[in-house]
Image (cartoon, rainbow, N blue to C red):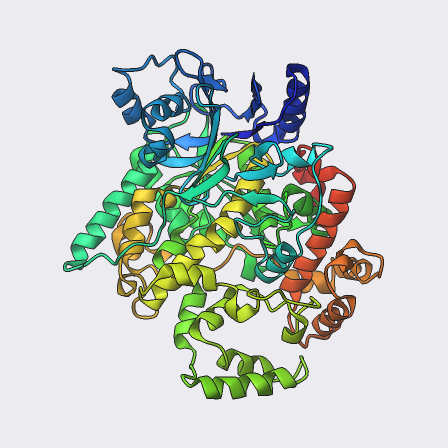
Length: 631
């Protein structure tokens, strides 16, 4: 696992290129503390920071082909690299055991189409001396990040924005549309970026650059596919069981200590139970617990760990939210408003004390219809008539924001797409009761998910919702949260349930095999019966959350007072009177505005960290003893 960065097309001498690349690499030191590597050529610079996981001694980067004309820097893991090496060996000289090495030789044989042969999580950049061409690619699901910045004379890329922010010439102009999407969704969805002129390479896409054509981006993979005809449900269950086993098995290779996050839920328990079956050594598992009972999954996780026989480490904490919130703002190179980033950072730090690689159960809810919001939407009444929806909207919009029943009327006025959007996004326009003065066209709450729904086609509505989440929420929120939190402490996080053969099978299944009898993950539950403890099936769905509502009335109350000062940076982007109204209503208990208040507060702290230059620096690990108090 690494951080990568570099550029192509910039006209600099060798000394200047070396200094520039060293600066860009230094900003992502936390992603790869073991070593640094550079390739400097005419008009190109490739750099990386390495966290050694496979072929610790021989896997240094950049890696080149036999004649030194193709060079690669790589972040991720290629899980089928052994099979690829066998295919490549007759025609290529392979000098290491590293999965990185297969990339240069695959490129020699297939060019950019090499991505179709890869199984894994990856972001890589390949420079071809013969064609003076840069090829950059990101994995199918967006597990690994990749930003790019188009300049008049070329393009720069980086795993994190820090590498670009470290450059004096990088413009730091905030994109208002990205701020709006952040406040609505809690993250900036790809391909947008918080800074104008910078883009995130979307999942399943390849970028190419040469001096003649400039930057070209194309998609090579999509999760959207036709429904699989299922005549025999038991055969489908058996195929899913085989794919899950194969996915976890492929993710176990490591030359350094490996463990797993365990919440005790279906997804993480599935991964850990499979690890137990596939390894001879005792599996190490990790969980974080909280004092508040409704947010504490540690007792159940510990019970599952005992039944599975893992070597389990847990930490029951009373987090110092006030001390941690600024760390959250600094850890994410763009504003990131998911408050579960806080426990994710804590459990990553806990795991890193013991292992270098940790498997997680992320992705199961999106693949198998596990989120409670899917069930909530199915249970809601819907007004079919556009005229009646319009009447409900007019009445609801005319009522004061805190009026009882106003939100219900607005919900009834929405289409099914809009109603789903309201379960994953917040209204941000002033006319919607949000904190912005103006909402750009196309970003209204009812329409904010349209571009992903339009791609989902005519599948059943449950599948459409899951496809929207796979394309937006999964890479923008879940995978970003885990990548930045884990890499901030130099921990590699792997997500076996997002192995793309498993994903392709799961999204092809009809919705009736995912939600049944009011419960999500029906087919997954059937596939893992006998594998995981029975108690896993009876545990209520619980998110990895924190008690934000109470924090804003107690520990973080003074943060709201500071936030309301008129000189705060955030008021370049939001309306102070609207924020003050949210604070009043939240404190009075009239509405729970904790989610939006957290997003506004994080944005404000992120802007302050940006102004101080902290986002252009490598991260320092959290000192757990200074921010948590064990019970």
